Length: 241
Image 1 (tube, one colour):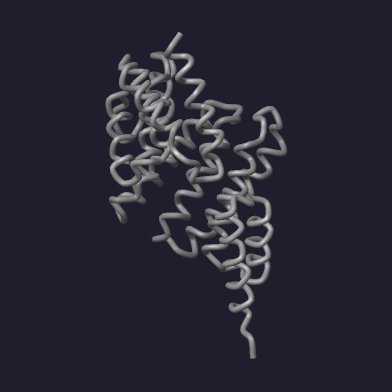
Image 2 (cartoon, helix red, strand yellow):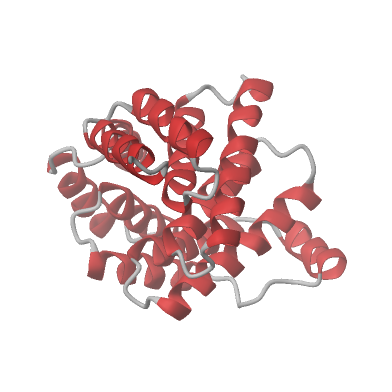
């Protein structure tokens, strides 16, 4: 007799193969079939969340409603996965990614700040259980970088109306976090872009240019690396002007 779990796990493995082949839509379809067969399949929920965020992240931000619909599904899947397996760092990262993308099109400052606070909380929680989780360091670096670029009025409003932030905001902290991420994944194009962005913000353009050239020369290892290389090229052009 074949159990329900066996077909679901076979589908999940097929979904992982599609994901490795950068077939995001195909992987999502398989992961959602797994969820239909086994709603408590935490890994399928996590990977479906990541695929939804990947699809939404490639869409023009002007497609607000369609993009938001995908990201809301990604958020819900990740939250369900966290509830089922609280120690699952990948589920928390999927949740962080969905919130970060939702923040890009948030209509209110309150929503953006609340998302920022949750993102920090989730990344910190990941590092409490796994100090080598590179993506969590990257998230905190990006968090620091984005908040350090708020103007004085925006920072004051956050402190007054939202109770401030859980740690001091600075470009130096942003750079430190990116460097920590690169200790564990030295050839991540995404992490190198973050490091170069922080260096540029700190007026260390010579170092930023070297890092961007290195990132552009790396082979594509993830589905979004081609787009990340384009961002590196745009930043390089901006710095070189």
